[in-house]
Image 1 (cartoon, rainbow, N blue to C red):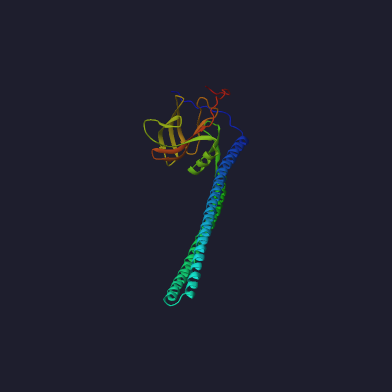
Image 2: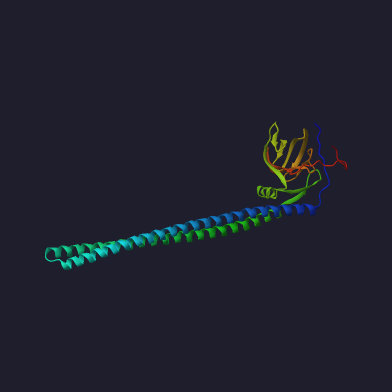
Length: 297
């Protein structure tokens, strides 16, 4: 098939800058919204945990009150028995009086033991309440720390994205068409993907006889020159074969496909021995471009 490389007038720098800035702001807004949504969800989970813990503390207090009332009734019963035994001892004579005194001593001992058990139970319940309160305070501190970390991550991510976008370059492609922003490494490519202006397909293309599918085109590497950072390749798009000879790294290789007003671009970031690494950038929206000004269908 015959080789076909078509060009078109370069878009204005102002439109490109506005599009890049708009895409960056939109990406940052979406990213910030998602992170703050995560913070709100964490706060809601904290409120649920705190409400559940307060409910458990209320149950403990109710149980403690019921237990205290039961212990008090038991103590009152023992006191009544003790008083009855003492009155019986005072009225009895001889052995009967001795038995009554012995019984009174036993009841007094039981009363003391019951008081000790009651004090221990109350102390245990108070300890549980203090522990629950401490756990709530600890979780509140953890959530505050998490919120602070999320805010720091938002600020750092935003600053890093803005810095990377500022470092991106816009160059003219091999068809003479002003290219959009291009990436020279993985970090910059990630920033381009975040802008969301184009579709990006990364590839590692070895030198071999058959073509390799990348996006909706097919690529074949013919030659590499790692020392000079040069390479030659062929591509097939719309059943047309296009050859790109002796091209350099980070140079946009442009070509058109049917239904696209903007050119497709191949950018190679690294030339190795019998292998190249780069990406294919395609327009998000494909609209039939108008012919004219020397363009051929």
